[in-house]
Image (tube, rainbow, N blue to C red):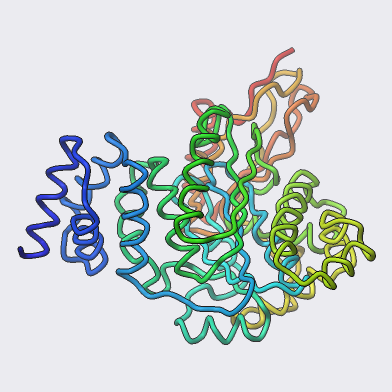
Length: 425
Protein backbone atom coordinates (compact mmCIF):
# COMPACT_ATOMS: atom_id res chain seq x y z
CA UNK A 1 0.00 0.00 0.00
CA UNK A 2 1.12 3.56 -0.76
CA UNK A 3 2.58 5.07 2.44
CA UNK A 4 0.47 8.23 2.32
CA UNK A 5 -2.69 6.17 1.91
CA UNK A 6 -1.61 3.99 4.84
CA UNK A 7 -0.98 7.11 6.95
CA UNK A 8 -4.41 8.58 6.13
CA UNK A 9 -6.19 5.31 6.94
CA UNK A 10 -4.24 5.11 10.21
CA UNK A 11 -5.38 8.63 11.17
CA UNK A 12 -8.97 7.62 10.40
CA UNK A 13 -8.55 4.62 12.71
CA UNK A 14 -7.14 6.76 15.52
CA UNK A 15 -9.93 9.32 15.22
CA UNK A 16 -12.45 6.61 16.12
CA UNK A 17 -10.31 5.34 19.00
CA UNK A 18 -8.63 2.27 17.47
CA UNK A 19 -5.03 1.28 18.25
CA UNK A 20 -2.32 1.63 15.62
CA UNK A 21 0.45 -0.75 14.59
CA UNK A 22 4.11 0.25 14.30
CA UNK A 23 3.84 0.16 10.50
CA UNK A 24 0.91 2.59 10.60
CA UNK A 25 2.58 4.95 13.07
CA UNK A 26 5.85 4.87 11.12
CA UNK A 27 3.93 5.83 7.96
CA UNK A 28 2.36 8.84 9.72
CA UNK A 29 5.69 9.99 11.22
CA UNK A 30 7.51 9.55 7.90
CA UNK A 31 4.89 11.53 5.99
CA UNK A 32 4.97 14.33 8.59
CA UNK A 33 8.79 14.36 8.78
CA UNK A 34 9.12 14.81 5.02
CA UNK A 35 6.30 17.40 4.93
CA UNK A 36 4.12 15.24 2.67
CA UNK A 37 1.05 14.91 4.87
CA UNK A 38 0.02 18.57 5.00
CA UNK A 39 -1.20 20.73 7.88
CA UNK A 40 -4.84 19.60 7.78
CA UNK A 41 -4.13 15.87 8.09
CA UNK A 42 -1.36 16.49 10.62
CA UNK A 43 -3.85 18.51 12.68
CA UNK A 44 -6.31 15.62 12.60
CA UNK A 45 -3.61 13.28 13.87
CA UNK A 46 -2.60 15.69 16.66
CA UNK A 47 -6.25 16.13 17.64
CA UNK A 48 -6.84 12.37 17.69
CA UNK A 49 -3.96 11.89 20.10
CA UNK A 50 -5.16 14.70 22.34
CA UNK A 51 -8.72 13.39 22.60
CA UNK A 52 -8.19 9.62 22.52
CA UNK A 53 -4.70 9.23 23.95
CA UNK A 54 -2.29 6.40 23.16
CA UNK A 55 -1.61 3.01 24.71
CA UNK A 56 1.85 2.32 26.17
CA UNK A 57 2.65 0.24 23.11
CA UNK A 58 1.61 3.07 20.77
CA UNK A 59 3.71 5.53 22.79
CA UNK A 60 6.72 3.26 22.30
CA UNK A 61 5.96 2.98 18.57
CA UNK A 62 5.57 6.76 18.25
CA UNK A 63 8.88 7.43 19.99
CA UNK A 64 10.71 4.79 17.95
CA UNK A 65 9.25 6.04 14.66
CA UNK A 66 9.96 9.68 15.51
CA UNK A 67 13.63 8.80 16.11
CA UNK A 68 13.98 6.54 13.05
CA UNK A 69 12.50 9.06 10.60
CA UNK A 70 15.25 11.56 11.47
CA UNK A 71 18.95 11.82 12.18
CA UNK A 72 20.63 11.03 15.47
CA UNK A 73 23.86 11.76 17.34
CA UNK A 74 26.18 9.18 18.83
CA UNK A 75 28.48 10.04 21.75
CA UNK A 76 30.65 7.65 23.70
CA UNK A 77 30.30 6.97 27.43
CA UNK A 78 27.98 8.72 29.86
CA UNK A 79 25.82 11.33 28.12
CA UNK A 80 23.70 13.44 30.46
CA UNK A 81 20.56 15.46 29.89
CA UNK A 82 17.84 17.20 31.86
CA UNK A 83 14.38 18.23 30.78
CA UNK A 84 11.46 19.99 32.40
CA UNK A 85 8.07 19.65 30.75
CA UNK A 86 7.65 23.40 31.16
CA UNK A 87 4.39 25.30 31.23
CA UNK A 88 5.74 27.73 33.84
CA UNK A 89 7.23 31.07 32.77
CA UNK A 90 10.54 32.19 34.26
CA UNK A 91 12.07 28.74 34.88
CA UNK A 92 15.34 28.97 32.93
CA UNK A 93 17.29 26.47 35.08
CA UNK A 94 18.82 24.66 32.09
CA UNK A 95 21.25 27.52 31.42
CA UNK A 96 22.63 26.93 34.93
CA UNK A 97 22.48 23.12 35.02
CA UNK A 98 24.28 22.45 31.72
CA UNK A 99 27.51 24.28 32.66
CA UNK A 100 27.49 22.67 36.14
CA UNK A 101 27.29 19.17 34.64
CA UNK A 102 29.88 19.94 31.96
CA UNK A 103 32.25 21.48 34.54
CA UNK A 104 31.91 18.24 36.53
CA UNK A 105 33.34 16.39 33.54
CA UNK A 106 30.22 14.82 32.02
CA UNK A 107 29.05 15.31 28.43
CA UNK A 108 25.72 17.11 28.19
CA UNK A 109 24.67 17.93 24.61
CA UNK A 110 21.40 19.78 25.27
CA UNK A 111 18.73 19.83 22.61
CA UNK A 112 16.26 22.54 23.57
CA UNK A 113 12.90 23.66 22.28
CA UNK A 114 11.41 26.99 21.45
CA UNK A 115 8.40 28.27 23.36
CA UNK A 116 5.09 26.50 22.87
CA UNK A 117 2.96 27.51 25.87
CA UNK A 118 5.31 29.96 27.63
CA UNK A 119 6.94 33.31 26.71
CA UNK A 120 10.37 31.67 26.23
CA UNK A 121 11.85 28.25 25.56
CA UNK A 122 15.44 27.41 26.45
CA UNK A 123 16.47 27.79 22.80
CA UNK A 124 14.83 31.26 22.66
CA UNK A 125 16.75 32.34 25.78
CA UNK A 126 20.11 30.91 24.70
CA UNK A 127 19.69 32.64 21.33
CA UNK A 128 19.90 35.98 23.15
CA UNK A 129 23.62 35.37 23.77
CA UNK A 130 24.73 32.88 21.10
CA UNK A 131 23.70 30.97 18.01
CA UNK A 132 21.51 27.90 18.59
CA UNK A 133 21.17 26.60 15.03
CA UNK A 134 23.97 24.23 13.98
CA UNK A 135 24.60 21.28 11.72
CA UNK A 136 25.20 17.81 13.12
CA UNK A 137 28.93 18.13 12.44
CA UNK A 138 29.12 21.52 14.16
CA UNK A 139 27.40 20.13 17.27
CA UNK A 140 29.95 17.31 17.48
CA UNK A 141 32.75 19.91 17.39
CA UNK A 142 31.14 22.12 20.05
CA UNK A 143 30.63 19.17 22.41
CA UNK A 144 34.15 17.87 21.76
CA UNK A 145 35.55 21.28 22.66
CA UNK A 146 33.39 22.16 25.70
CA UNK A 147 31.66 18.95 26.77
CA UNK A 148 28.28 20.58 26.21
CA UNK A 149 25.99 22.57 23.96
CA UNK A 150 22.61 24.28 24.27
CA UNK A 151 21.10 24.22 20.80
CA UNK A 152 17.71 24.26 19.12
CA UNK A 153 16.53 20.70 18.52
CA UNK A 154 14.98 21.67 15.18
CA UNK A 155 18.23 22.96 13.70
CA UNK A 156 18.66 19.70 11.79
CA UNK A 157 16.57 16.57 11.29
CA UNK A 158 16.44 15.32 14.90
CA UNK A 159 12.94 13.83 15.32
CA UNK A 160 11.71 16.16 12.53
CA UNK A 161 8.08 15.02 12.81
CA UNK A 162 8.02 16.47 16.32
CA UNK A 163 8.86 19.96 15.09
CA UNK A 164 6.06 19.80 12.51
CA UNK A 165 3.60 18.68 15.20
CA UNK A 166 4.76 21.52 17.49
CA UNK A 167 3.90 24.03 14.74
CA UNK A 168 0.35 22.66 14.75
CA UNK A 169 0.07 22.76 18.55
CA UNK A 170 1.55 26.22 19.09
CA UNK A 171 -1.46 28.38 18.08
CA UNK A 172 -3.73 26.38 20.43
CA UNK A 173 -1.24 26.55 23.33
CA UNK A 174 -1.71 22.94 24.35
CA UNK A 175 0.06 19.61 24.31
CA UNK A 176 -1.29 16.23 25.34
CA UNK A 177 0.61 14.41 28.10
CA UNK A 178 1.40 11.56 25.69
CA UNK A 179 2.74 14.01 23.13
CA UNK A 180 4.96 15.66 25.76
CA UNK A 181 6.33 12.25 26.69
CA UNK A 182 7.08 11.17 23.13
CA UNK A 183 8.55 14.54 22.13
CA UNK A 184 10.93 14.65 25.11
CA UNK A 185 12.12 11.05 24.95
CA UNK A 186 12.51 10.96 21.15
CA UNK A 187 14.80 13.98 21.21
CA UNK A 188 16.79 12.78 24.23
CA UNK A 189 17.45 9.40 22.61
CA UNK A 190 18.16 10.90 19.17
CA UNK A 191 20.67 13.26 20.80
CA UNK A 192 22.53 10.29 22.27
CA UNK A 193 21.52 10.83 25.92
CA UNK A 194 21.66 7.81 28.21
CA UNK A 195 21.44 9.43 31.69
CA UNK A 196 18.40 11.71 31.95
CA UNK A 197 16.67 13.63 34.74
CA UNK A 198 13.08 14.68 34.05
CA UNK A 199 11.42 17.44 36.07
CA UNK A 200 7.63 17.31 36.29
CA UNK A 201 6.26 20.48 37.95
CA UNK A 202 2.61 20.34 38.92
CA UNK A 203 0.20 22.90 40.30
CA UNK A 204 -2.86 25.03 39.66
CA UNK A 205 -1.18 27.25 37.07
CA UNK A 206 0.94 24.73 35.12
CA UNK A 207 0.41 21.93 32.57
CA UNK A 208 0.11 19.19 35.19
CA UNK A 209 -2.60 20.26 37.63
CA UNK A 210 -2.33 17.50 40.23
CA UNK A 211 0.34 15.33 41.80
CA UNK A 212 -1.55 12.30 40.50
CA UNK A 213 -1.09 13.60 36.92
CA UNK A 214 2.66 13.86 37.52
CA UNK A 215 2.77 10.33 38.94
CA UNK A 216 0.97 8.91 35.89
CA UNK A 217 3.36 10.70 33.55
CA UNK A 218 6.34 9.59 35.66
CA UNK A 219 5.41 5.94 35.16
CA UNK A 220 5.16 6.47 31.41
CA UNK A 221 8.59 8.12 31.30
CA UNK A 222 10.03 5.21 33.27
CA UNK A 223 8.36 2.73 30.91
CA UNK A 224 9.94 4.36 27.83
CA UNK A 225 13.32 4.61 29.54
CA UNK A 226 13.28 0.84 30.13
CA UNK A 227 12.28 0.18 26.50
CA UNK A 228 15.23 2.23 25.23
CA UNK A 229 17.70 1.23 27.97
CA UNK A 230 18.04 4.79 29.32
CA UNK A 231 19.03 5.54 32.93
CA UNK A 232 16.36 7.95 34.06
CA UNK A 233 15.19 9.68 37.22
CA UNK A 234 11.99 11.69 37.52
CA UNK A 235 11.64 14.54 40.03
CA UNK A 236 8.21 15.98 40.75
CA UNK A 237 7.57 19.23 42.62
CA UNK A 238 4.70 21.57 43.37
CA UNK A 239 5.10 24.89 41.56
CA UNK A 240 2.86 27.90 42.17
CA UNK A 241 4.98 30.71 40.70
CA UNK A 242 8.01 31.42 38.47
CA UNK A 243 11.38 30.55 40.03
CA UNK A 244 12.97 33.57 38.36
CA UNK A 245 11.81 37.17 38.25
CA UNK A 246 12.37 37.77 34.53
CA UNK A 247 9.76 36.63 32.00
CA UNK A 248 10.71 36.53 28.32
CA UNK A 249 13.89 35.33 26.53
CA UNK A 250 16.29 38.14 27.48
CA UNK A 251 15.03 38.63 31.03
CA UNK A 252 15.12 34.89 31.75
CA UNK A 253 18.67 34.66 30.38
CA UNK A 254 19.65 37.58 32.59
CA UNK A 255 18.28 35.74 35.65
CA UNK A 256 20.32 32.62 34.78
CA UNK A 257 23.47 34.67 34.25
CA UNK A 258 22.93 36.41 37.59
CA UNK A 259 22.85 33.00 39.30
CA UNK A 260 26.06 31.93 37.54
CA UNK A 261 27.72 35.27 38.40
CA UNK A 262 26.63 35.14 42.08
CA UNK A 263 25.00 38.53 41.46
CA UNK A 264 23.32 40.15 44.46
CA UNK A 265 20.03 40.34 42.48
CA UNK A 266 20.01 36.67 41.51
CA UNK A 267 16.67 34.88 42.07
CA UNK A 268 17.37 32.36 44.85
CA UNK A 269 14.44 29.99 44.03
CA UNK A 270 15.90 29.56 40.53
CA UNK A 271 19.34 28.84 41.99
CA UNK A 272 17.90 26.29 44.42
CA UNK A 273 15.94 24.53 41.68
CA UNK A 274 19.02 24.38 39.41
CA UNK A 275 21.16 22.93 42.21
CA UNK A 276 18.55 20.30 43.07
CA UNK A 277 18.22 19.12 39.47
CA UNK A 278 21.98 19.29 38.82
CA UNK A 279 22.62 17.28 41.98
CA UNK A 280 20.16 14.56 40.87
CA UNK A 281 21.77 14.39 37.43
CA UNK A 282 25.30 14.21 38.89
CA UNK A 283 24.14 11.38 41.19
CA UNK A 284 22.64 9.48 38.24
CA UNK A 285 25.84 9.83 36.20
CA UNK A 286 28.11 9.04 39.13
CA UNK A 287 26.41 5.65 39.63
CA UNK A 288 28.05 4.47 36.40
CA UNK A 289 31.48 5.90 37.16
CA UNK A 290 34.41 3.89 38.52
CA UNK A 291 34.65 3.03 42.21
CA UNK A 292 37.71 5.30 42.41
CA UNK A 293 35.78 8.27 41.02
CA UNK A 294 32.89 7.66 43.44
CA UNK A 295 35.30 7.51 46.36
CA UNK A 296 37.07 10.68 45.23
CA UNK A 297 33.82 12.66 45.05
CA UNK A 298 32.59 11.32 48.40
CA UNK A 299 35.85 12.22 50.14
CA UNK A 300 36.03 15.68 48.58
CA UNK A 301 32.38 16.76 48.62
CA UNK A 302 30.42 14.15 50.66
CA UNK A 303 27.52 14.22 48.19
CA UNK A 304 26.51 15.51 44.76
CA UNK A 305 24.51 18.43 46.20
CA UNK A 306 27.69 19.86 47.72
CA UNK A 307 29.57 19.01 44.52
CA UNK A 308 27.10 21.00 42.40
CA UNK A 309 27.17 23.83 44.95
CA UNK A 310 30.97 24.04 44.80
CA UNK A 311 31.00 24.10 40.99
CA UNK A 312 28.49 26.96 41.00
CA UNK A 313 29.94 29.02 43.87
CA UNK A 314 33.58 28.65 42.78
CA UNK A 315 32.84 30.18 39.37
CA UNK A 316 33.59 26.96 37.46
CA UNK A 317 30.05 26.86 36.05
CA UNK A 318 30.28 30.48 34.85
CA UNK A 319 33.60 29.81 33.12
CA UNK A 320 32.17 26.72 31.45
CA UNK A 321 29.12 28.67 30.32
CA UNK A 322 31.38 31.28 28.72
CA UNK A 323 33.21 28.47 26.89
CA UNK A 324 29.89 27.17 25.56
CA UNK A 325 28.78 30.67 24.50
CA UNK A 326 32.05 31.22 22.62
CA UNK A 327 31.89 27.80 20.94
CA UNK A 328 28.34 28.67 19.81
CA UNK A 329 29.53 31.91 18.15
CA UNK A 330 28.50 34.22 21.01
CA UNK A 331 30.45 36.79 23.01
CA UNK A 332 32.04 35.12 26.08
CA UNK A 333 32.43 38.55 27.70
CA UNK A 334 28.65 38.90 28.04
CA UNK A 335 27.38 39.70 31.54
CA UNK A 336 23.93 40.05 33.03
CA UNK A 337 24.38 43.83 33.21
CA UNK A 338 24.89 44.00 29.44
CA UNK A 339 21.49 42.45 28.76
CA UNK A 340 19.14 45.39 28.37
CA UNK A 341 15.38 44.81 28.23
CA UNK A 342 13.04 46.45 25.68
CA UNK A 343 13.39 50.19 25.06
CA UNK A 344 9.82 50.96 26.20
CA UNK A 345 8.79 50.21 29.77
CA UNK A 346 5.98 50.87 32.22
CA UNK A 347 5.42 49.84 35.83
CA UNK A 348 2.33 48.08 37.13
CA UNK A 349 1.41 49.28 40.61
CA UNK A 350 -0.79 47.85 43.33
CA UNK A 351 -4.26 49.34 43.55
CA UNK A 352 -4.51 48.28 47.20
CA UNK A 353 -2.31 47.11 50.02
CA UNK A 354 -2.26 43.56 51.33
CA UNK A 355 -0.45 40.29 50.72
CA UNK A 356 0.27 38.27 47.55
CA UNK A 357 -1.89 35.14 47.88
CA UNK A 358 -1.57 33.88 44.30
CA UNK A 359 0.75 34.41 41.34
CA UNK A 360 -1.32 34.08 38.16
CA UNK A 361 1.09 32.35 35.77
CA UNK A 362 -1.33 32.15 32.85
CA UNK A 363 -1.91 35.90 33.00
CA UNK A 364 1.85 36.51 33.21
CA UNK A 365 2.24 34.44 30.05
CA UNK A 366 -0.60 36.28 28.31
CA UNK A 367 0.86 39.73 29.04
CA UNK A 368 4.36 38.63 28.01
CA UNK A 369 3.01 37.47 24.66
CA UNK A 370 1.12 40.74 24.16
CA UNK A 371 4.41 42.54 24.84
CA UNK A 372 6.03 40.56 22.02
CA UNK A 373 7.75 37.57 23.66
CA UNK A 374 9.19 35.22 22.58
CA UNK A 375 9.59 36.59 19.03
CA UNK A 376 10.87 39.93 20.31
CA UNK A 377 13.50 38.67 22.72
CA UNK A 378 13.93 41.85 24.79
CA UNK A 379 10.21 42.03 25.53
CA UNK A 380 8.65 40.66 28.70
CA UNK A 381 8.11 41.37 32.40
CA UNK A 382 10.19 41.71 35.53
CA UNK A 383 8.34 40.64 38.68
CA UNK A 384 9.08 42.50 41.91
CA UNK A 385 6.82 40.34 44.05
CA UNK A 386 6.50 36.67 45.01
CA UNK A 387 3.98 34.53 46.90
CA UNK A 388 3.45 35.74 50.45
CA UNK A 389 5.10 39.14 49.94
CA UNK A 390 3.47 42.17 51.59
CA UNK A 391 2.30 44.91 49.23
CA UNK A 392 1.65 48.60 49.92
CA UNK A 393 -0.85 50.68 48.00
CA UNK A 394 0.73 52.11 44.81
CA UNK A 395 3.85 49.92 45.22
CA UNK A 396 5.45 48.55 42.02
CA UNK A 397 4.45 44.94 41.34
CA UNK A 398 6.20 44.47 38.01
CA UNK A 399 7.74 46.28 35.07
CA UNK A 400 6.56 45.67 31.51
CA UNK A 401 9.14 45.86 28.69
CA UNK A 402 8.62 45.92 24.94
CA UNK A 403 10.40 46.93 21.74
CA UNK A 404 7.07 48.37 20.59
CA UNK A 405 5.36 51.30 22.28
CA UNK A 406 2.03 50.10 20.87
CA UNK A 407 2.48 46.61 22.34
CA UNK A 408 3.55 48.09 25.67
CA UNK A 409 0.40 50.22 25.89
CA UNK A 410 -1.77 47.29 24.80
CA UNK A 411 -0.28 45.07 27.52
CA UNK A 412 -0.62 47.77 30.16
CA UNK A 413 -4.28 48.30 29.29
CA UNK A 414 -4.84 44.52 29.28
CA UNK A 415 -3.56 44.21 32.83
CA UNK A 416 -7.04 44.80 34.27
CA UNK A 417 -8.22 41.70 32.42
CA UNK A 418 -5.02 39.76 33.14
CA UNK A 419 -3.85 40.69 36.66
CA UNK A 420 -0.46 39.26 37.61
CA UNK A 421 -1.19 38.71 41.28
CA UNK A 422 -4.09 38.12 43.63
CA UNK A 423 -3.78 40.49 46.58
CA UNK A 424 -5.78 40.08 49.77
CA UNK A 425 -5.85 42.35 52.80
